[in-house]
Image (spheres, rainbow, N blue to C red):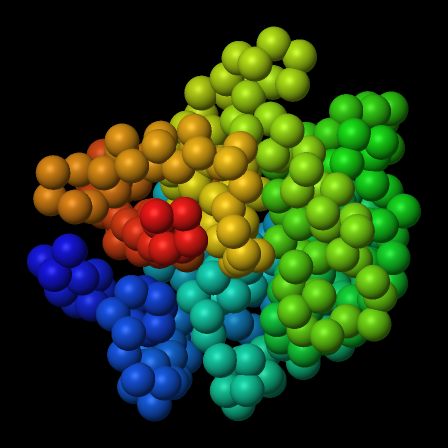
Length: 319
């Protein structure tokens, strides 16, 4: 473990401060000081430097039509682009950038005043129509101190009878989606933790039950693996579901792990490499601002951090 922690601590400040908080037991003063560096240096600073005129890449969910990558295209130009405001703020939230940092506040204020959804021109923190997008907007808004109550109320009204959510519900789907459900659950948890006025606990627990009933990756009808891709771990996950993302959500909820997580936990254990790391897998294709790590099949600090803290939570409460 010591060698793995040393390797993790040699990474970007966005990884390092979370390793210090979640794995090494560093003092709160040291953790706070390291967290402040996310906005000041490294990949967090690079993302903040790309903000301009109320948005990233000139758009809310997708880049503006006149936007061009400043240093040429990075990533897959044929995939979904991950450079606009929603995926970028999601990534800064994953980085744990300090919402009180002056540059962060200025950027978020600019998004609130100047960024609008491509779908209908609504203001960014008023939300869109798809619950997977709105789950992300709620998570971002709650984290960065914005009013997202109208989006929360909309999401509560869109919960399906099986407990989850699905972006295809507006097209008639009555079955929930793992992808959409995890996006909404993360948003509701962030909203609840931020002290939101709307009671979301019951809806959140129903959504959790949707995942738990399926052991985080199996079909309710047959017990078969619902999607083999969910057994691979990617970072950033964007709007996609996978088992590690699901487990990291339940770790964030805390408490005693439900026994229905056991199979997913053992899958995480089995994927640890002999050097103690976990690999990057199944990177979701699309344009990106810059590469975070070394690519699929190579050790991933982000996946290793997330796997280790999931296992520490699980083993610390069930061992």
